[in-house]
Length: 561
Image 1 (cartoon, rainbow, N blue to C red):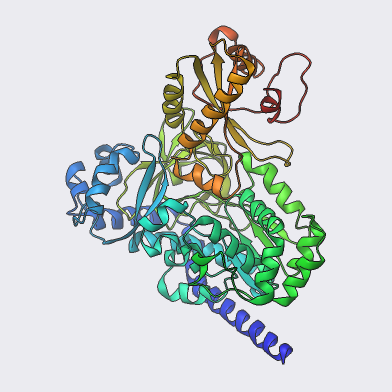
Image 2: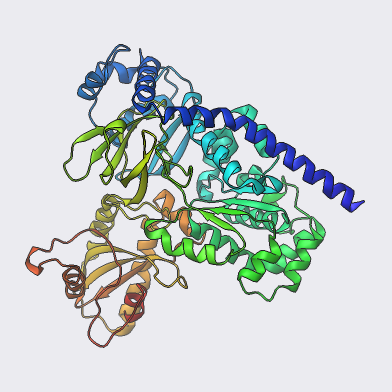
């Protein structure tokens, strides 16, 4: 009886995959054609965009008309950031019509800001369709490059939000499948290992626990798609820390009595998975992952910039699976995605321009050349025009006429695991902490881990101007570190990364020779001591320490302190 049911489920899963593939192929074909006519495709998108914003308040502000050409569009609309749109977004959130475009806004997706703590990005149906025009060719290519992913369930990480925002947002805010057209989301929901409803739990802790239970229960898991590899690693650690609780849930098919926030959700049941946990020695290694998910074909996650070390660690834990990197996909829009072993521009999605970071000139997508270092500027159907993103890309080549990119990193800010800390945030923290009287905050340090044993973290480097005893210093250190952590947690993505176990707790480092430590760090990187400008935010790697202190990882500064 069990084999009959198992075979039926397996056939149904493959049928849903075939349907999902068929629904994505049209978008895949459209994208493939667009790569041969980039300029024509982009002009058509700009024309449609100008048509969709005609009569809106923003079109009136900039003097835009449907018939404007590219030159007029660029002359009338400067390169913008969130602060330029914030007032209009707030008007639209307040219920006014035709503010940013003619389209009705369906939801607002939160993300980290720079000067503002949280940015609310409007999502209307036209904008969601733009996103799907990148999802479809990516999914088409996935099924073609890795055909065995259609033999099992998939896990796509959710649009997680911190616990204290969950009751303030609409129910759809965490539902990633609502980013897809309704006809596609119906089929996609059938192949997901973890139901989207887990994100509606009262707390992120309950969401994470439920996610771990469903993942462990899914013995036919064939594909994992997450953004940060540290998120996947933190899920494995969560499974380890809660192995007996998860084992109990899977054995009984019921949540624990203490998990009232999951009462709305049916608990998974799998005696087979429960036995795997029971026989597990507790080591997170390749033997465990293969025993738990023997059918896993592919893992997709960031693998460039500061994510590289964590991606390698994650891939090392799954030698029986292949690994695929991500392109550049932000809350504000999509720029690139994996396709035919490259990361091409999502040419059928938004209208794109690029600022050359060397000469500061603006280029269209069809004017780019291999080797350029650029930042993307996107105009999207949600009404945000010439929106300058804070990311650095390198043009690596082309698929036909379509440029391909490598993600280099965030501009100005630090984004080790997706926390998106900006210099503006660092300045505010430094000013606040320096008001304590007996310390001078110098710089906020982002400290990535170089050995994959410790989590990355943040530290505020401060000059000690007090004459406190060792005991008094210990008390002050604890108080200031608590205050620093609280300030950072006001930033949406930092708090999220902390709740998901991707970052360690921030600390304040108060040193009598703090300036010497900072200067030595800069001199070691080729700067002239007299020309060193104190930066509010620094990515602190391979730091120079006082004589006699040796290390090959960033955590040494904390250990030495």
